[in-house]
Image 1 (cartoon, helix red, strand yellow):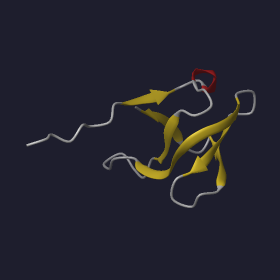
Image 2 (cartoon, helix red, strand yellow; image 1 turned 120 degrees about the vertical axis):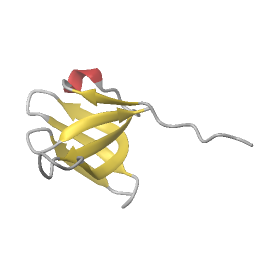
Image 3 (tube, helix red, strand yellow; image 1 turned 180 degrees about the vertical axis):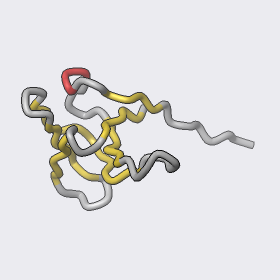
Amino acid sequence: MLKEAKAHVTRIRALDQLHRGDEIEARLSVGPNYDDVVIRRGSVQETAPGIGVVWIMDHHTGSRKAINTDECSVWRVA
């Protein structure tokens, strides 16, 4: 029987740690007693560390989305 491999997830605290093609999740904190909620998941297209924005190709919608790091946390999924 094959075991399902679990993705290794790492929080990104500085956008200069990201590269085009990295798989990431944007997570929103919903409260101190709850886990963060994944609101976007996709591959990095472009970053703008100076303004705290990363653009991804969203896996769910298939369109380009901007993620503002002032509003949510960013996690690399490997």
